[in-house]
Length: 61
Image (cartoon, rainbow, N blue to C red):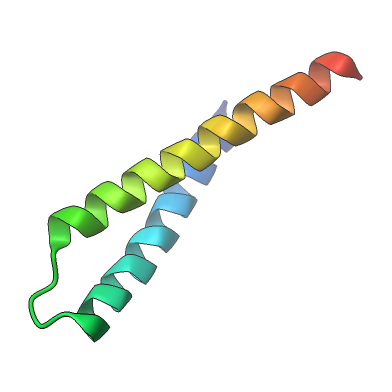
């Protein structure tokens, strides 16, 4: 469980930085709410999918 939380924070930070960089490059006034909500939801989705896929692999082995 500790690895999952750590991966969530790492994914969230990476996606947030990339999203903010893209917002600053393409927009005059960046939308911070969209950057934060996108980073949260994408990283949460990735971690949940990985958790269920890894859980099924460990049960079958």
